[in-house]
Amino acid sequence: MTIRLAALSLAAVALACAAALGGCSREGIKPPANGNPWTVHGVVRIVDNEEPNSLVRMFSHQAAADDVTALLFEPLFRFDEHGEPVPALATTFPTQANGLISKDGLRITFPLRADARWSDGAPVTSSDVVFTWHAIVDGRNPVASTAGYDAIADMVADGPHRVTMVLKQAYAPAVFLFSEGSYPPLPSHLLAGYPRIDHLPYDADPVGDGPFLLARWIHGSDLIFAPNPRYWRGPPHLREIDIRIIPNSVTDVDALKTHEIDVLDGVSKNLAGQLASIPGVDVVHQLSANYRHLDLNTRNPLLADVVVRRAIAQSIDFERIIHDVYGGFGLRSGTTVPPMSWAANGVRPLPFDPAGASLALDADGWLAPAPGAVRMKDGRPLSLAISSSSESTPNQEAEELIVDDLRRVGIDVHIKNYATTTLFAPDGPLYGGHYDMAWIVDTEGTDPDILGSIGCAYIPPAGADTVFYCNPRVDALLRDAETHYDAGRRRRDYADASRILVGDAPFVVAYWEINVIGYDSDLRNFRPSPYITDFWNAWEWRI
Image (tube, rainbow, N blue to C red; front, side):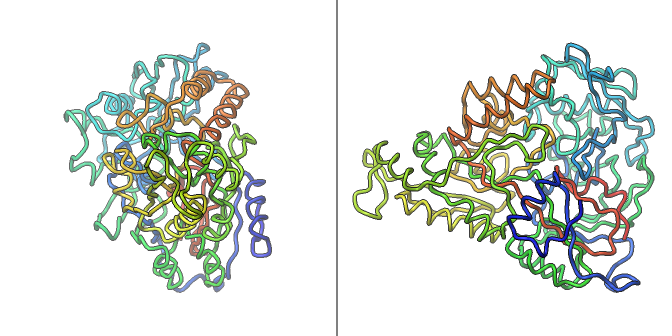
């Protein structure tokens, strides 16, 4: 559904995007009939606010890595503008109905296309998928997470172009492993001889099987990509994609205004209103599977107290933050299940209730020695730090509002931000547990499984449970959802787990992001996806 947003209220934007299940709208001043004079034909210049720490997806937690690896590597499946899987390296999506998932759910087979080639000319085969699985789970490589891959008992190459997962038990999300947003297969003929594959020259200059090749990496400035002539779909239409690293959200909008760039994907929400006045720029607003959340490190003795966590959740005016900081481009929610998901539920967040939070803290023994003072308990002040990425001005503005809200109920908070690469590093504040609260964004895939980021077995360094939370009831529900292929049963499991997580508040979901994208109106076939990356069909782009 295409709608013009200029006349809609911000609330209506959210509702319209939600109703469209990820549909997008366009607005903007139209270019001259013969195209824009600033367009560099065949070249797309696009902004990313961060530089990937690695070009091998299994070693990175960054959204930038999703974008770059979508260009360099071919996953089993990509996800289109409706969030539907698109066959890529795999030719058919497995189901029990088509026989590619066994009746007992323990074997999932992926037919692989026979015409895929690595950019050095070697064929892509089932051996590459098997090798990549071993590299993920053998314990020798510092992968971002083994969640899901550790559910596989064995990978069997049924010939060069057919591979079967043999599962330890039925595991429904396994159909999405090795797909976009996950870890795409790597070339075994180049990497199998190394005991570990991190910190190899390959990591910064990979041989891939995706639509583009890395032509040049100017660290801190640009990643420049050229078409892969051996791509199985045929060479892409573009002759170059230039990803420019511009950490500052004001600078990147200025670059779009002066037409130094062609695509600004993820416009800072407080600047989104400026885009409509830029000639020759189309604007897309799309509900996405990115959710903003406040993580609470339950390993911190103060935050191990559920009363404190709930009080924090109820003392922050998230609606105000969405409106004042992020321009209203957010859909308030209480759950990690995307609103456009088949598993979407109506679980609501804890209500904004600072008075109730204050009473709960009083009853819990956190008392203020004087009006407006910091609460104390057993001689210890209720004092915490909040962290986010230092590159984002809106994030810092949101932190200031959170600080003000929490101080009103007697919780002292100071801001301690980090560069994105530091914040999300394997040994950084989040994964090392050296933080109190974190204001961050996550991207969900098409399967709503979150056990790897909240389960007892996935506390770092074993996984991505960076809130260090363990609840056997939540684990049981999420594992039940993993081990059944019935959508109704899985939906109920996720709803029940969501209710517990809202009540326990190891993290607080603030909103689902309505992504704002500005791009040169000469760009064709640019169709943003609600999931993972908008680069999913870059081979089709024309300009």
